[in-house]
Amino acid sequence: MKGALYIKEVKGKGRGVFSSAPIVAGDIVESCKMLVFHPEDYDLSTASFLINYSFFIDRDRNIVGLASGFGSLYNHAAPANATHKIYKEYNRVDIVALRDIANDEEICINYHGAFDDPSTSWFDNRGLEYHP
Image (cartoon, rainbow, N blue to C red):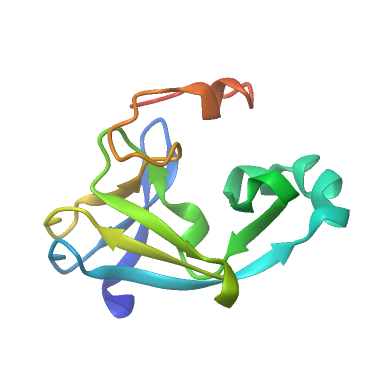
């Protein structure tokens, strides 16, 4: 997949991740190493815009990670066509297709976890307007 992924502007959302090749359900779209911000860095990471591009690795311990590659650029959707799986022991997040994704279709994850969670709290908590 790596060579097929590209970034394109999406009206109302900013940048989004797309693939020039079709993706089959269950395929790993991208495997991304993460730059990890440990608890002592949590206040700094949440005080900047970086938190909007980060994944919680361990919410209870305030550990977040910024994904390499396109990992931190996948937009939110409900329902989403992909999901993310975090591997704490490897400081990695995989983006995995939940269903077949057509070429040039935006690849989206659900920021709340469950692929069809309709909550907008992620955006509300950051004072951002949600654009479905």
